[in-house]
Image 1: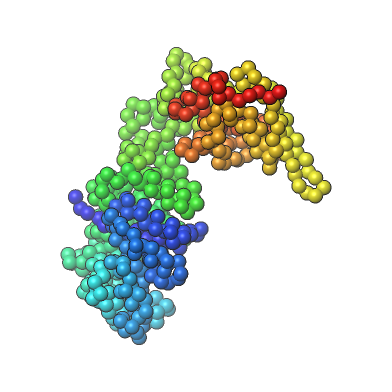
Image 2: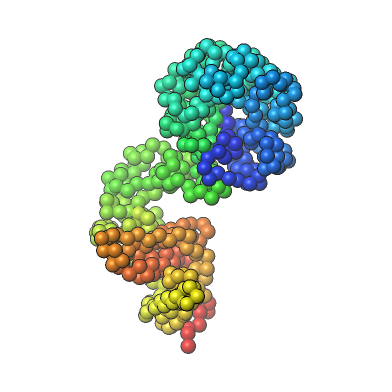
Amino acid sequence: MTRISIYDTTLRDGMQGEGMSLSAAEKVRVAHILDGLGIDIIEAGFPASNPKEEELFGLLEQESFEHAQIAAFGMTRRKGVAADEDRGLRLMADCFAPVSTIVGKTWSLHLEKVVRVDRQENLRMISESVAFLVRHGKRVVYDAEHFFDAWSDDRDYALSCLRAAVEAGAENVSLCDTNGATLPSQVAETVREVVAGLGPEARIGIHCHNDAECGVANTLAAVQEGASLVQGTLNGYGERCGNANLVSIIANLQLKLGYECIPPERMAALTDSSHLVDELLNFLPDPNRAYVGKNAFAHKGGLHVAGIAADPATFEHIDPAAVGNERDVLISELSGRGTVLSRAAHTGVELEGDKANRVLERVKELEHRGFQFEAADGSFDLLIRRATGDYEPLFRLESWRVIAEKREDGKVATEATIKIWVNGERYVRTAEGNGPVHALDRALRDAISETYPHLRDIKLVNYKVRILDESKATAAVTRVLLDASDGTETWGAIGVHENVIEASWDALVDSLEAGMLPGRPDRVRDRATASGPAAAQPAS
């Protein structure tokens, strides 16, 4: 099995994307996540280019990594300056990082317009910079910037730039599609000719951007033509449209093409690693991301669900568990009986007789009215329980009332009062909130949280309102979607009504009741003890 080295540049190139910002300590956490995956080289950035980078390299020097080596990034020497007198190269040579990656020019447009040096001086800049770092014991990767543009312009000179780096001691020369405009067939042809032109002693790398949405495809094409080192970023972060996504690259190379990129036992960590770095960046994980997205193995159409029930290979290109993901069955008016049965089984419910058909008909009826169970799995689980008769509400509602008051000073006060019955006892609670849903939530929890302690762990994490019939303006039907979480699981709930507060109440109640469904020990225990000594005292 051919071994491909994986080179991650999330901490440097990835940070150039819009909205990307991590503290030095957070970057260290990312480095450990990458190391845990089995990444070979982690590019940390420019040593001492700014206070944060200086802090980062100081922290990394104290860390221990199981697999990865740290790379410092810099440029070839400046024109007219000897390599051993160039401050940037000197910093890289003195840095603890065992790998030094330097970027240099190969395209005549940049020689003329940017660095303003002649071709021979540029070759000396490449050669002398690489040789200087090699003399200081560094493993050197040479990034040939804009290589594919340079190849189209003058392939002989582009090849001579690579040869200068190889002959000076670079262990890898990486071809950079810096503008991200090259197509896979062009990458394949170019890499094939470069490999032939440099000979077997040279190791070729590939560094692609995603401006034409070909970053992953271009990388795969390069590997198949002889590239043995792959550069990219986790989740495809990066400037403009991003860099080539290492998550997809690793999965494609290792699971589809038979290359070894990371230890096989670490493949299942891809999904968690992808999502964890998103969380550190305060990004919502992209549900449609290949391999690791929530929707990557989600099935909605009835025929598809029936197919995977017979054999998952009918509609899944790999086993989701291979990358640490899982199958999801989405519920909608497009669903078939198999979809309902699959979801019921997933939640530990057995639907007998024609109960699945009744659930399906109810779903279609409700979705016609504006419900959307695809985004409200908690509400759907409750719908299944109601169909089986295996459903006991947390309480019986007598009434609720919300008062909103805007005062002369501009402040808005909201107060909610609920009257409910729990285990034959009547509870009346009033609470204030920053809005009607908040006030209702606080009043309801105050009434029943002692009876059901697990409710204290359940938090609302998202609230969305959509107008379903815009032509009716403020009289339109509204759909409210809530997401709730107990810190381990997250589920959705839905309410649809002409009154937005009633729609919110329905979704709120569903979100709490779904979080209390049997299936976890703490939920079962809460239910079992609801009428025992732990029950709350009723209102007087």
